[in-house]
Image 1 (cartoon, rainbow, N blue to C red):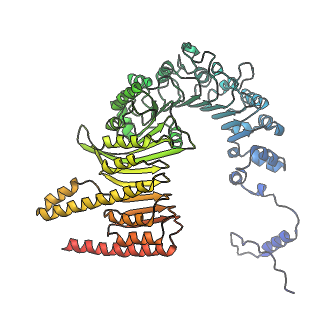
Image 2: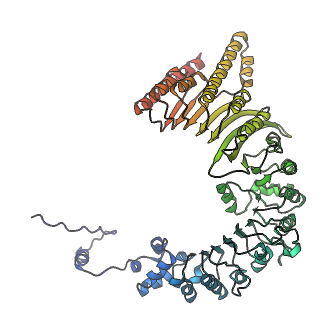
Image 3: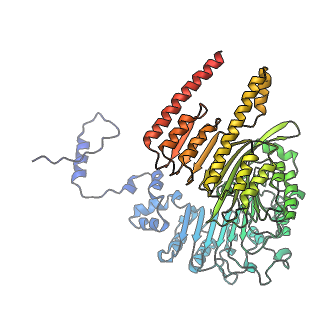
Amino acid sequence: MEQQQQPLLPAPLISSTKDDSETTSLSSFLQTSNHAIDFVRCLPFELLPLVFDSFPIENLFECMNVSPSWRYRIARSPSLWQQVTVIGDATKHDLIPKLQQSSIAAYIRQYKIIDGSEKEYSQSADLIVSGCLTRLQSLAIHGGQQYCFYDDSNSNNILQSIQHLRNTLTELELTWYGRDLSSSHLPRLSSLLSGCPSLRRLRVDMPAIRANDGGDNEKETGDTLPLFLSSINDDEHGWKLTHLQWLIGSRKATAHEFASILDTCPALTYLKLDSCKEPTSFLSLLLDRKSPKTLRYLALSAEHNKSFENHYWNDDGNVGSEEARAVKQHQHCYNLKALAIPCLNEIDWINLTNFMMMMNRIQDLTILHGDHHAFDLARLLRVYHGKQLRLRHTGLRYQYISTIHARVSFNYSSQLNRQRKTTVITSTFCRDYMVQCPWFMNQLKSSSFAVSTLSLGFSQCFILDSCLRRLLDGFPCLQEIDIDNCVLESTTLTDLIDGLAAGSEDGCSSDEETITSQDNLQYHHRHLLSLPPPMKHISFGSIPGLTDSLVATLAEIHSLKQVTLSCCYSVTDQGVRDLVDKSGIELEQVVIRDCKQVSYMTTEYIQKKLESRSRKGLAYYYDACIL
């Protein structure tokens, strides 16, 4: 029989010149002993968070009951208790009383309750009032349908207890999705700031709260307004609030409340009001006031992209050196970088245009628009010089979303010289709203006098023949086009590819005529610069009508450098090979993704063909330079 192999022990980390008798005896002890090793007792304090960091709070308390050494070391690891989250019914574990009875609560920096019961909210209020959370900086309360954390009839209200955190609490988040309260029960912004003057970030999200019995808040005046700030704190510089997000579904904020926030919060960086009454009229109030100069993000009855919105919410508000120098030169809200606002009628449009003429530092603009009779995109592009423009239609249903992307480069004249800007325009609308696509193309065509280059992308759209004609006739500067998962007839797709190929042939013939008729090389060079940029990239994704003959026709677009085909199941090896064989030296890349009838051998053939062609083209260019 083969001798049973003994398990190997790890070699010692530090070599020694002494006898190995101690190592041998330790090895034999570990192999024969049945005693368990307390790894928590052996680990240093610095490594304990790596072991217990992912444990829920109830599991940490269970681990503390293992032994006195475990209890001592876990209870004295502050990093394990800095973020405490109470989820659901925590009364069965008695978590909150355990925090109050021990010294662990002094380590808590962030405390969050999600869908708590009446007992949990009451216990949390007792925990705050008792002075256990002496270092708490962030408090988040997410209420569900069971119990409302904010109730005036409850003497042990958790919001009334936050005044005991007035020197430490800097962030407060209140979320309530129940329907048991009306807008008269809303917490007052002035009460929250008076209770915690050190508060810097405040997020109130109660989208399902119902309006007053009168249906509007026109009769509310002065201190009865939830957002009105009538006085500042003892500091003469005003409240310390830097981020405010107030999302109340049916209750509309007034211009009076908006003005009071601007006057009493000079350090405000982020402001989002979900429901406003005539929000474009708020823009004139922003221009009339000298503060806050630090305001970077403003959203009034409209939403930005979530990732972009979180970027500004996590921004600490510190300005750079260039912006600090601009503070001394500008007296108004010079630093506003992002704006989201509705534009639903002609008055809204006039207010928005006048505001954009004054605020030329905005880089991201989101507009919630309705019908097109009062919306002039071409005029907006003349006064807006930012990098991102998002258009969202009011009839948008998120399960039927169509999107048009346009990357536009403009030439415009400034006070000093002629400059060039690039703006990415994104139009999002319901797929059934088919007039959006022709309207968008008409607006871009009206701005084509200053457009130098253009890239267009269509995703899940109905592309009509009228839209196609505008695309072919009105955009000589079109360089890239991307059509992904769109509905269009086979004749429309054929007309598009044939039209692009015909335009490419016209451009090449005009170049040849110029070369033969002009002997002056400098004149020919100026003529080439004046021509519109040629088509460089075409991408098709999930287009059933794309056949081999249409793919081969793409080779007639002589300026084409890249072709991308994704999920085009009607395209076979023959169409892709014809494209590569018939194209010229300009074609540099063909990308094939998930085309089931295109084999791997064809992709290898394309790669070798394009690589050999690029080497020949490089040699030809080198010889031309030598000559």
